[in-house]
Image (cartoon, rainbow, N blue to C red; front, side):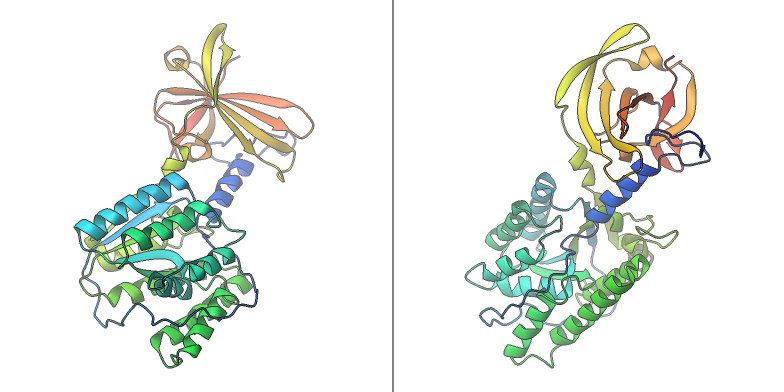
Length: 383
């Protein structure tokens, strides 16, 4: 990086990463997408009406059923709708009953109790505990209510570390104690999940979390023998050859699971649906003396990043053939950093607004370039 001249955060050099603000922003978004319901409030609550837990313990060797993982961005309505449709298909047409979710063990168990209740009191308690996380929105709550209504025999399996350990975790422990279940597996695993949560939040250790998510998943799925299951997790956890968020080289959960279950595991990323959007307006931008329709896709806030305020994105329509022979610059911007979907043969304008009021405009094209294994656009010179 040139330390003498500030750069627009929309730059990535071939050997030196210059896109630090945008890549950091992407990491923050991925982190949010992999931490659904990860607040840890400590409000005192009392157990709801006692009900027997929904799940019986099944002891089996390594699972032999199929594992279908779906990566998401948490709390996005159209992704939740798609996930419900997929689960409903598995539930009604394939006879599946076990839905794995990126929740703590005790949260999923408490949801199983709620599934047998005649009201939504438990769901309301759990939902309020998600305040401050991407899952705290009506769409997530409706997703679970729709499952209860239309797929009532669903059994949830939570395999994340113990988020909300001193609230939902304590509440579920109280529920088990009130029902004389202190010697049960549910009680033991709840205590274990609470300890996992304490250690994770104490050390902020992403490697620990990813490994525990994997271990917990294996424990739960192996109980089910030849039952096939569906899992919903943040997309950072579901890439079959992916690296865990916040680590240098640790295989992510799905990558580790693939080592164990081989061809029995499948994964599909649904997070792209967040970028399946239409432009909010059409402007006109002149490039090399020619005016083009410019589809506007909005701003990307960079508040908190040194010297930068925000970025704005346009796609120049029908411009690729005119600009593809212009001089290219060794600066790359991966597709993931755009707010919309990218296709080969497109041209983009990015305005970088700085905190001093200045604006830098840059031009990129998608010509099939790959940078560090990522499909990327490449900057070109329009002077």
